[in-house]
Image (cartoon, rainbow, N blue to C red; front, top):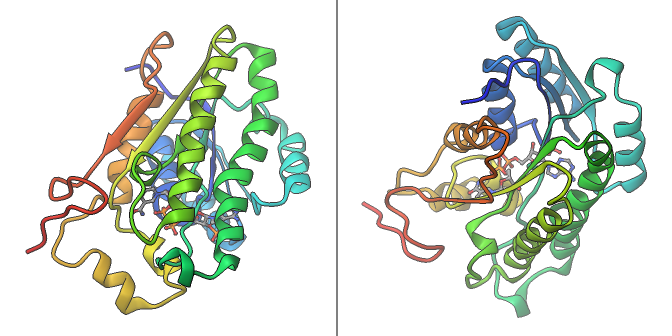
Length: 256
Ligand SMILES: NC(=O)c1ccc[n+]([C@@H]2O[C@H](COP(=O)([O-])OP(=O)(O)OC[C@H]3O[C@@H](n4cnc5c(N)ncnc54)[C@H](OP(=O)(O)O)[C@@H]3O)[C@@H](O)[C@H]2O)c1
């Protein structure tokens, strides 16, 4: 394992779930963290807690990854201590609705495409410039098994994550001579606020997703992110598919 101490890690969508767990996991390893989300009060609280618990530097700011100009400005104006980003974790993302395509609400498509694809592109573009210049860096994208395998009622979410798959592979080719690592993690079912958001706050529907199955936790995915980030510099884990033991595909799970 290579030390992550004093590395600077930028995590998007760190106010909850996987992003928040990544912030804690990296800080535990002594990395300094830059965390953002739309709910700025949450990331600010998390940053204060990380500094207190782990003695690392933590900087929080509000960012909606869908807003290209805001992304550019935020990355350009990072405080001096956080300017050189060693590791970018593109985590901000969401599902909206789980409906047959012909019964779905296109408003959700806009949100998913704008966040999961365009947001990821904007953040990556803003951050990769300095990585290319320094010839050093690591980009870790949180995709999904949905990006590998389409499932019913998930056409646009699956498509948005399939886009992340292609973007990751292509960028890896573009920076092959720049000493920049590019990785993609495809989690199966992780119990977070994801389903609550997907079902627009319907608690019952959200709970049913995880009924009778021990889903992955946000911490399980954060462990994997830290593992990928802490390999020796010449090791690029390009892809990591992670399922709960009782899930075999997007549509095959064993529930008790
Ligand atoms: N949970 C699963 O089963 C699962 C499986 C595979 C992949 N994933 C992926 O894992 C990632 C994290 O999801 P999660 O499960 O941790 O869900 P979550 O608990 O709902 O967290 C999602 C995070 O993304 C942020 N976010 C959403 N839209 C944003 C925007 N426009 N700008 C900035 N931040 C935004 C949210 O923060 P704010 O609302 O404060 O902005 C929140 O911090 C997503 O990309 C998701 O697609 C999840």
